[in-house]
Image (cartoon, rainbow, N blue to C red; front, side):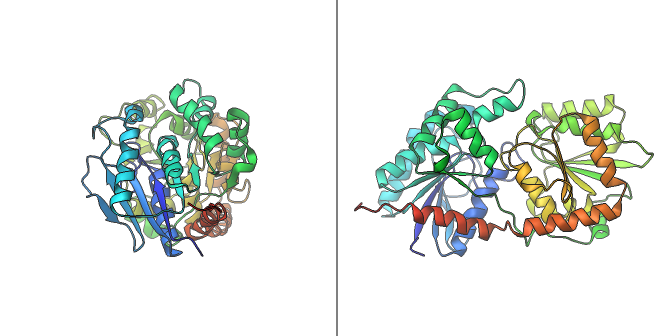
Length: 404
């Protein structure tokens, strides 16, 4: 491999952030794991991110060949919605760091549209390819759920980046098609590479031991893992849980979010009370990523009822643990979950449709085990090392041919 050093730009999503708090989620994990696996291939990786209130120092290693570089860019407490104006400062700081340390990069890979704004200018200055992974798209989010709004600045920047970048890495054909339809992107510029999963961390464990570890009794158990926000569809799942009949005791574990002071979580608590199932819904809050396998293994089924998921990492983590998934047929979820084999995909966003599929799985331990085995086999082809190898090939195949 001729690839030596690359720059990953993750402006607002620090790979070291605690997952499940605030906006930290799948993208933070994606960048961290991709960098580590690129390092396993022998590539030096610098991840440039914005300095934030949790002190980490300027440069912090996350593996032998990958490190996170924190640089000042605007007030530390600035919310995500106000960070656009800090991008020029961030770009200048990256260029200064690169110059002082005499670093040379062969590619820039940006994550999210804010990073893309800076990444495009960095790649142009360094005369190297610019690859971008958007993770989510404004127009797709706005089309997925009534009431979703995104800044015009974001919409315009995403459109401009799709024309300017060297390559776009998308998770699924659905995402590629949306880029072409909504933004006028050239489909030939888009490379399909899925997200990955850590198969050593997320693996089948003894189910009974896992249930004891998290204090789960003998009830049938549903699991939701994700941020507590309307786009994730938790309301639909709570309503579906209330419709489960048959006399069996069912518990819903909600993992993610901050338990105190979150208006959306408080709304979900009130909804469970109104439906008479407050005693069957456990709001667990944020769980360390290393502990999530216990929850996936303890659950009978993981439910991903999102309005929009560019990929759907929780579904893949659950499958890697051998737990079937019931998910909305949106975005990348339809490329992960094999309908009827590793779980069910629901095209209708109504509680009774979800409740029906959940009852089918909950009523048959044999079906759970069969789907679980299929789920694990599917996940085994999506390791982070396999994903990194595909991404590295994108970098290498787009090296500039002329003198720099």
